[in-house]
Length: 130
Image (cartoon, rainbow, N blue to C red; front, side, top):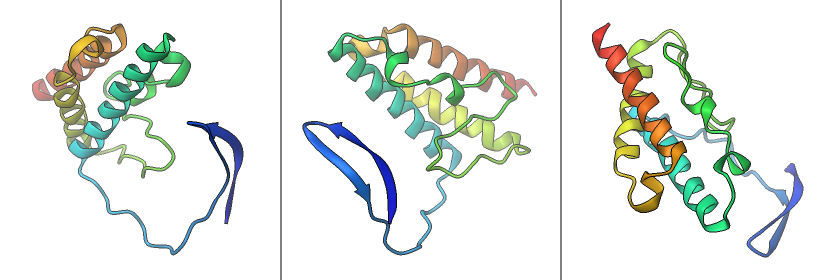
């Protein structure tokens, strides 16, 4: 059993998390990982807009989009990216940029999503030129 701090979420409380088995999660492709991180940014941006708070209050998204050539810092529940594989980093940023490009409505116009998309496309262009 893994103990986690007590917190409230959607009216309920969670005081513990039980982990069963030891089967590792399947390894995702870098594009899938980039797409997942982009969806996190989009969903947290949506939540911030609904709650009327800044995105940075809910999610520190900048480690997910470091300045190239640094690999991203992924959440602790994901395996770390291979630091020496530029093709992994390129595909990560491609997946991230493709998903951010599909953001719709007011979310697509927020400064965080616009900046994240610009940083991702800049990294992809830099990697293609290399």
